[in-house]
Image 1: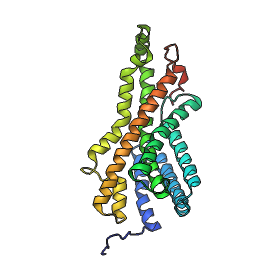
Image 2: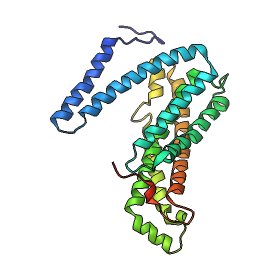
Image 3: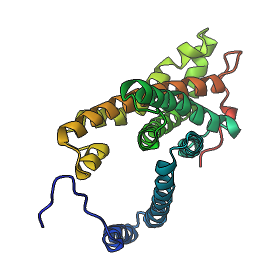
Length: 271
């Protein structure tokens, strides 16, 4: 079948069912190999499908209306969901609403500010909240920042728990909380930023990133798709870095009190 440039092949429900059969095979293999992942594979596959179908309907209506209020409300829903996911992925979570607030707040400060700069200054779309630009861009920023924040804070709480005696000895010797936890916080920031740095290193040579692939499949000229992908990678890296640094700093302030004491009682027990 000859495909004209700019033509998008439509997928049918049968096509999606064929693709979903891969998850069924993977679940069976997990059961045979006793990996214990079959339930998560099936449940999360169904959940992902339902979420994407739902957001597809919402975005179709949103793109038609271009309402700032609707864009803002959807952005808040996305932020809240990303904050919760980043928080629940941690083994030793900071207790109460504080842990959720740290994850959500760090992503708000980083992802929303980066998205606003990109939309109003770099891309210069009019109006800046145009949903077909704002929502996909914010989604990519939140998704990657969420992963970085979850990895970094999880590493921080785990390292402080395991190296408690070492940190407390440094505090007893007169170091403040910043000095006593400096090497741990540095390692945690590196951990949170490693996935996006690896993605940047492999982009184009090993893998074609999702946004670029989608644009090419949609008929966008390859060079133009590459330009957008370079922009997105820079934005994601910046957002992830700022988010991880903010989350580590805020988490450290919760885990050390004003008397320079390590307060691991602020952590929930390991799941």
